[in-house]
Image (cartoon, rainbow, N blue to C red):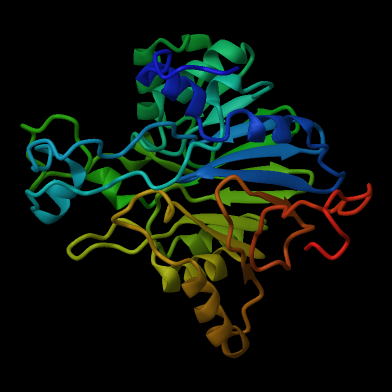
Length: 355
């Protein structure tokens, strides 16, 4: 439809532009027929994933539809913010969102469960909760106690929520969702009341605010580490569970901050978990934590023969699909480049050698 500049407003621009991918990925996921003996996952940005099984079960995990900084404001950190508590900073954190919105949350369909790893707002999102609650009346909301308390405060009906603790399982159709201990020390210094002083006090109970997940499917088991830091207990999880693919929150930490898993510890995590594939996520979303994931691949190449690694890294792109086990030997994702039907009809150029 042809418009005039008089008809264009900020509101019309926003509605016609965001989310940037419209329903393109929603349609792709809905139309995907997962092959028997496989499982498919899509990266939605940050640590958000969509998991779909051969049996047609759809699990949405940690989808975040918010933004980072939108203004310089006072230039100061919000008092009591976890990064302020961690490192004693005062200047504003320049955490701009760097990835587009690849999924339209209000066009989601057929979600069987919304699963959230922990309390931080770039994982626990009110927009996602609202969309799933409205569009998917049978979907369950699964998370640790404080995640569930937030959902209840937002108006999610109590009969739809399920509190989960480490070593507990919830069965959603053909998928068994097992919670495991989280190792998110940033979450332990997260407190919404800026007047509360944490110094000298016992920390919060991690099990009430954060968990890791193992999604057990007929096509393979996917381990989602949320925002966990590296822990020796990854080896315990690897001993006790069959893990095919593990996802970890990778990034380059600014000075004075330890919030993301760096390249060497991504490899240590995969080795400890006895995983077959390790996929870094989260490095994409914040401008001040961005890292090059190919660093993981290069270090893996350097170490793999000497340390006899039995896993491979996979470098994803947001909006991209990963199929296990079909893609287990791939090292990198690329989008469909199109034009597979070149010259199936006669081209139309001024003369044959025009191009």
